[in-house]
Image 1: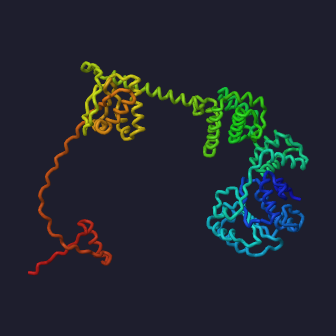
Image 2: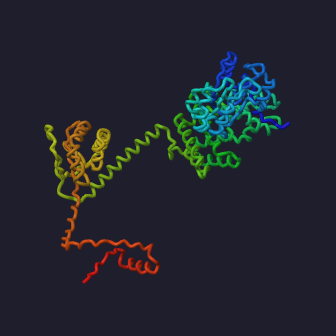
Image 3: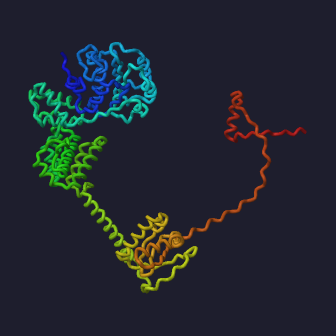
Length: 572
């Protein structure tokens, strides 16, 4: 007899065999017992969680010779036909291959016929979200009011792609991911039935790699048991599934903590020589960092679906990094994982990620507090650079007339109404201190928050200093200086009053731009005599002329143009 894969051999036969879906099996059993059988069901959930198996169990429960019963016997003729796929009353349709409107029309034609052997005709449509919009529309009316002997079961992994009009006509059951403990318990039952000696850690690895799907777990067990030789060890599972292993991950973590880039790259090269996948390296390193993060927060890894790691390792390496550093490192690893799909050189992507982790000061992988400190330092450095530039410009100016003495403090003048156009004055720059430059930066920030046009205008100017009563700004052109004095003077002086606590008058100056050269004189046009009256134009049809006459005429048109007029002859 041909070998049967484990996931087929151990497919659930009754509701009691379903793993991790007790809420669904109990609801369907009660519905069958009470006779409240729906005409359409929608089974949604991750792959390998029992949607199709539950649909077949429901079909057997409805058509079993002992039923309808929540516990089909599995031995009667109807149950056996459903098990081996030969039943004339149970139809399995793959919507990924039969997704068009023609297939749904054929289905609608067969729905009206009565069952052949059992009580109900059951239509199981797998991956129903793959149907086209037209196919869904064709199915809608039949799904809403099917014959009494028909039950539809729609299965999908992406319920959000099923139209709401279809969902509203079905009873929806959401299948949940199966936990690691439930998968491990099922694997223990299977391996005990197989007579296979298994290490507990090996089953844990398979259960975690299955990612919530029991079918995937049975497939992985089938793959690993082929090389087990009577005993399935953790090392054999790690080798078969291409897992990295704790030892290499711990070495990578220690190299990152010690900032040993060479050691980290050497570990990576060693793993690649052993045939390990780059994606698996990043995945297991991020899982280990997740274990450290959770262990720091909770002190345990129970109920977290993680690899069983020694507490002494978690205690030791958990002290290597702070929680902020671990989160930043995990984020960097996830970015590298996303980039692997499109990178022409995936190994370089992983090496860059490891170097960034080993040298956080030279990369974006920094704790939040360190990043904030770096931003503040950058702002201070920018201000210092601006001050140095202004000081150099002032020092480079040639000596001119002796500087005017600083204006004495004068009593605050009463506010007067702004004139229509304030005159633009030429102001003398004064030495700028750090506090004065800070006032300028705060002024720009306030203008940006209050009035963007004023900020756009003033930002083009250059701070020229401030005295006890004046605030000096210099522009490249007179136009922008005049605009600032005309439209934004009162707003700027109001902000300066709030920033400095004293009344400052705004003075804007602008460098005169060179005058445009006068336009060239336009020469006077000579008076021309009026044109003669236009002659009537004669249209010549060259296509209708014989070749011997058309050739010389085309030559004449080429030389003199094709404007043909009629010449009147004098009949004298």
